[in-house]
Amino acid sequence: MVDKSSSTEKSGADVSLGLAVEEGVVSRKYGTLPFGPIGLGTHPRRLQIRHLIQLGLWSCLIYFFWQLLHSSNWSGDFGSVTPDFSYLASHCSHISPIPLRSFIERQDSLARTLHTLNASAYIAEPGASAGYFANLSSSHWGLSERPLLLIVQPSADPLGNIRANISILTPAFEETRAKLLPIPSAAGVTYAAWPEDHSPFSQALSLVPTLTGATIYVDGNVRTFIADGLQKAAPQVAISAAPVQVRRLRERKSPEEIKILKCVNEATVLAIRAARVYMRIGMRESEAGQLIRRALAASGLTGGFALTLFGENAALPHGSGSDRVLGNNDFILIDTGGTLHGYHSDVTRTFALPETIIPLPYLKLWDVVHSAQQVALASAINGTITQSVDRAARKVIAEAGYGKYFTHRLGHGIGLETHESPYLVGGSEDVILTGHTFSDEPGIYIEGEIGIRLEDCFFIDEDGVARYLTAAVGGPALSPWSP
Image 1 (spheres, helix red, strand yellow):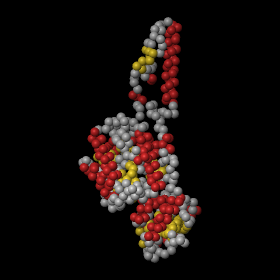
Image 2 (image 1 turned 120 degrees about the vertical axis):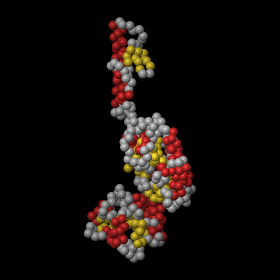
Image 3 (image 1 turned 90 degrees about the horizontal axis):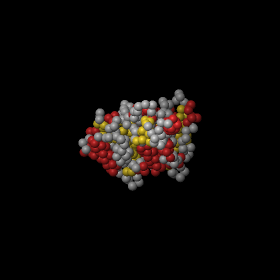
Image 4 (image 1 turned 90 degrees about the vertical axis):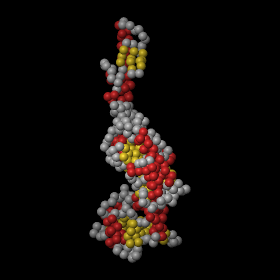
């Protein structure tokens, strides 16, 4: 931002424009401008001509500055260009949402998995998993004390193929609204309504033909009172959290999901770069965050967030900041993302402005974090245990002498949730497989001094190799001045 008080001071009536009128010339900060023939003299006629020329010149200058100040390309703060992020809108405009046929394929895959595991049903509340299998996210139906449940059961068609049988448990007074939900199904949806004075859990279990000795899986995000209520209503049924075979159906992304995830993460990187152009020494954390959110919205992403931390505030990895002013020697840490067709992005950049002077020790820290990020990517291959990837990044930082300042896990899965399983964390025995997607976000945090984190998300391609989702727009940061 430009400080209005920094204009060159002048004496006389010309202070506001930074000019000084002298005999025969108009003096400016960087030289002189002749405005008429030398030697006009003091004859009254010539003096009149000179005054008319001066008046014309002043009129032109005043008109120029008036146009500048009132142009739609400028903000109320002189010298600050109004951010224009409209060009970002085209980047993901060609990306389509998940088609209905894919939901039906997912349902049938779940049904076959349940059949293989000898399970009678799978139950989920509105959320990421119900959104994955039945287009039933929490944005379609908010959670309350009155359960609305997705129930998927395997059944055999006349040819013996295992297909999904889809049911919705709904409060009776909400049945009409429930039937308006956009739930795809090859064979239609069965709606079971429970009156307020009846048990919703008994009503849900009445949909399962044989309960004795049955196994019913509940989604890992189902609330405790739901799982407990189901178990109490049918003590003879084994109610348990969905196993890894079920979880992997959502964890391992299809090519159409990868396409969406690529674009939403690319758009997020482009938004950071676009917003950086308008950042200035002296601005506040809140102003930088607002720039990022505006750029995300212009990109067509929804639910945009922007954790914005300057200097030592970044030493708290998820700190709220203090609306600190950006200094000449400060790094900017931006952790940001949004959603496209329900799929999330998550990108972090720690960067400097062109005019920033970063102390050499801090630049070395940035290089250490950058190296750790690249080593982690190279170690994430099909069949690898997730903890080994975390360990590879941690080794780089530890060998540089900053191991105790890398205080969080390396990464998390990403998709319909910003943070989802599996996780790149010490102690995890999860296996990395093709289609898995992760964040790769090592960091160094020295409280009271500095925090640096770099984050890009990657996927495991069909060859079993990790590829950045942001590769099409240059991938990870190249330097503190090239985010």
